[in-house]
Image (cartoon, rainbow, N blue to C red; front, side, top):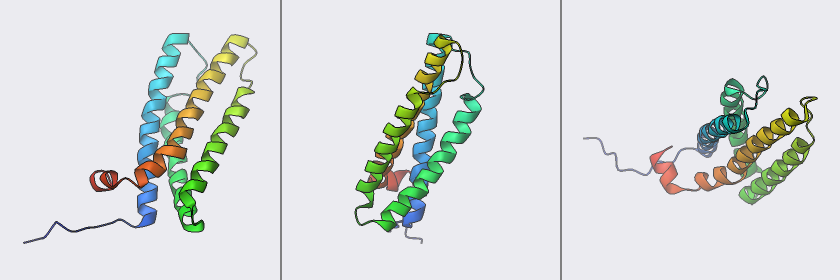
Length: 147
């Protein structure tokens, strides 16, 4: 008879990477939902840069890299969690600041709408990276039931 009541912990790298991917999937779904609601409410028509394909592929790839970076922060610094949260909160603020100045179209209405869509995506991804990854990484229930 096989005993399945053992305490098995995945390696740190695997946990960090899988947590990043899981948060990436959640962030992708939230970004897609935000995109649909935003486009329906504003009739925003510019789509070549931010569309379903780029949201699905890029958000997940970005969060895969962020999960690996989270591992690197944990290994490189004694308080890697705290430093990671601070760095990614500052990166989010930086990208929001840069996103405010994005010029996508000569039409002011489309330009403003594009900025709103972009900033929403940046904030969703920033919150996921800075706060959801460290929180879920340390959650025993998340490790037990999801990873």
